[in-house]
Image 1 (tube, rainbow, N blue to C red):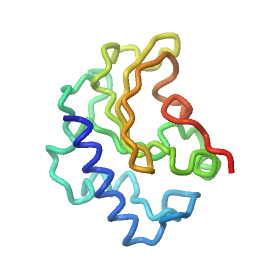
Image 2 (cartoon, rainbow, N blue to C red; image 1 turned 180 degrees about the vertical axis):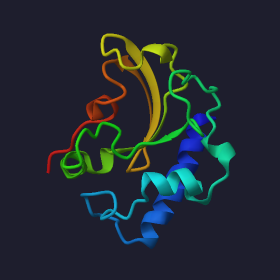
Image 3 (cartoon, one colour; image 1 turned 90 degrees about the horizontal axis):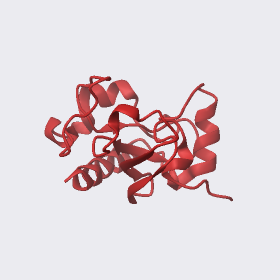
Length: 149
């Protein structure tokens, strides 16, 4: 299932982070010990390609991807300066991987007036299966709540 795939990907990410000493640090992905998007694209954290293929199929007809479960550490990042702000706000509630292919309305994912379904895994390892209205693609608050500290 997609939840199982997301869980396996999270475990691989935690192992990677452990090797690069970023645990407990919130800031830029590199400072947090996370791989670059390029590394993920080329190496998939050493996991098989099949892990990255959504059990829900590939519904991104408008956005072809080499694999369909996305590594989206900052999916809502507009400018690089936002990375640190989001990491500090969301901490363990940051979205790390998501599978949008299980949504019935994949053609209108950018429409915040519609309800969407998203499966994801947060930095804490919590698996989330959410169906609600809003901006699933760019709003970090759609996936999780910012943490006050």
